[in-house]
Length: 417
Image 1 (cartoon, rainbow, N blue to C red):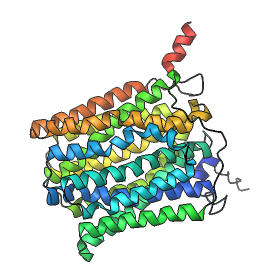
Image 2 (image 1 turned 180 degrees about the horizontal axis):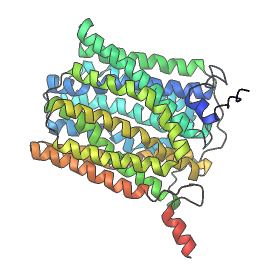
Image 3 (image 1 turned 60 degrees about the vertical axis):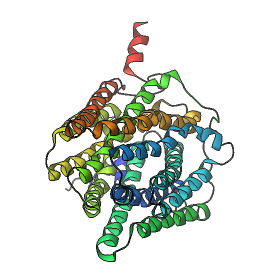
Image 4 (image 1 turned 120 degrees about the horizontal axis):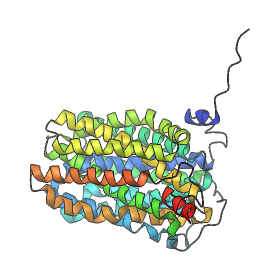
């Protein structure tokens, strides 16, 4: 007699992408996936070319690239202002508007190939990018249960990686086969993004949010661990985003096609890994996932500091990218401890906290970078130190986060009292 086949657990089904269309094509989850797919089309077209573009067209050095990346993060620092925007627009409408602004900013880059023109278009692109990121996070938390959130976030990362892969492939083909200019590639990426924003506006109904959101800036002492994790995450991620890719171009002489190919490899891996990372977090819990991430990043940043070959630097870049996929555990942790009415406001506040170090760190480290090999080593060792601080905080995440059980530290204090 054959053994009955066990039905896969619900989370395994979610991880395999089935059930996505249960609500039809015009469901909230499909809109979230469309937001997640649209953003990389503009942002990745910008990020994969910007290092070569600014060096070739505007003679940027480490000083200018540090300023550029610092300016790019200013809108993220101001993300707390989202609560004021929500007095005028619904969250869904504001997300679509942000996506369109992002597309316009990228479309204009090639038309303004000067230092100040690049600064201006970068800030415009970044305004749309960071407000969209805030709304994506907020809407995902409101439209998804705490148990399923890490899986949905992983799925969103997977679809974003797929969109990035398509973008990198098109950019690679445009540069090698089509002979297109920087201007044409930036323009195409921006206009496609604006077109998707129009689809989101006219192709979907207005969805209701289950809980009315606070329209004031919310800062609660019991969220302190979440704020601290976000702060160090922002500082650590900036070192990766700004200086790891710039090192490929300046130190190891990677051409735009080489950088695009490296990003393609990252996306191929992320398409498979990201949804499974979400499932892993749902099964393991947030603390083990964060501990694994930070231990890995300590090793990666330390290796960055002393790497001497281009192929090894590329390998570290891929490993670095994989560890960052575990960062969705921070959002999953917050969803379990948050008052549902605080989600939209705190999404903006947390992004601001995430960008406090992001605004000031790139210009300062850019000055360190220009000192030569010792400067590069110092920059990445600082990244390793920040990852070590994050590891300490991760150990304070309780095994079962909930309202009233926000951190192991406060739990022990209450027990002692």
